[in-house]
Structures are given as structure tokens and as C-alpha cells.
Length: 99
Image (tube, one colour):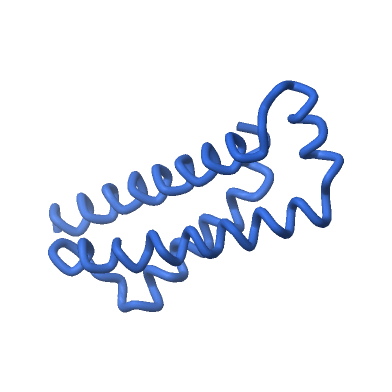
């Protein structure tokens, strides 16, 4: 969790910004948005992986010493990022539905 929280604000802002850029789709249009969103998140997380790997290798070495691979770290961070966005979108849909 500490690894993910170190860049979660950045990836969360990317998620919310991409949702707003495409006109903040809700309900039926949201499912069409998800296809492009997953591709965009994969691309942005790969850029984040490259950035962290090239600029902060000591942090990754710390997790390596704990027997946690880079792939496991970043797949878990990707999954947490997707989950956080979907929870956020659930609440947005709920608030919009209750209006």
C-alpha cells in the first residue's frame, strides 16, 4: 500500500481528468468510456513504471529485498488504481441517480 500511495494522487488525477475530458459520461455512455479508459490507464501506468524505475531504483530495490517483484508491485498498483476509480464512479453515479 505504501508503494501505491506514493503515486496514487498522480494516477487518480489522470483518471478523473480523462473522465472529465471526454464529457464526464454517466450510465450507458460510461460503459463505452471504459474501453478507452483501460487502454489509457495501461499506457499511463507503463509511463509511471518507466519513470519510477529510472528515477527511483532504490525504492524498487527495497521491495525486491522483501521478495516482491516489480511486476507484482505494478500489477497490484494498477488494480488498486482501477478499483479506486470504479468506487469513485459508483458514488458519482449514485449521487447523480438520487438527484
